[in-house]
Image 1 (cartoon, rainbow, N blue to C red):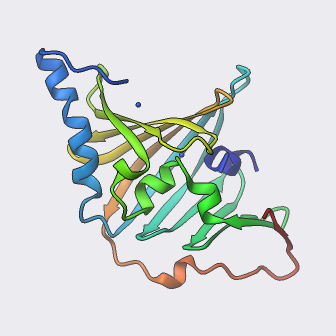
Image 2 (cartoon, rainbow, N blue to C red):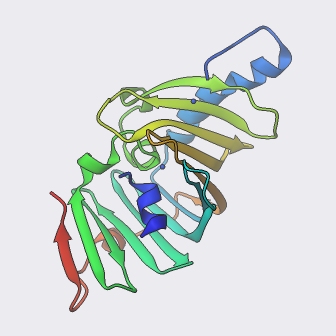
Length: 211
């Protein structure tokens, strides 16, 4: 469950100066709003890299991400183990297919301050985050988001765009663990069906409610 837990312990540096580099970085806040505006659905391949706070070995996972706004998403992990995380708008189900075990809990209790909340909610991101521009010396346009709620394990998010497209999400939790999501083959507003986000209880699976 390490890869799934990295997502939901459950997925940001304000300074603007009058220089060309900083003016480019200042577009990060606008980029967040522009990207979310008109976003109805999303499909992408992802690579997830988690760096433990204790300096232990990096954990890496890969899979496919599906999003249908509002508040429905599906993470399908296919490496190193097969897992599914499904949000149906009310609850989140985490299914470890190797253990045939499902844990589930209230979606709102899990999402506050997470990348999933940023992407899945139709509310303006300023409703949940303090957003600022982040200057970084690479080819991405960055913004930093600090959750407004105190009742979350996530302390900050950083989101990077390339040519207006979602490229990278960085998440830091209150334990100091860092998780990086790298997105490829991003398809904006594909035709996704609501049925994809209905969780069917697997036959014979342990079914554990967290709340």
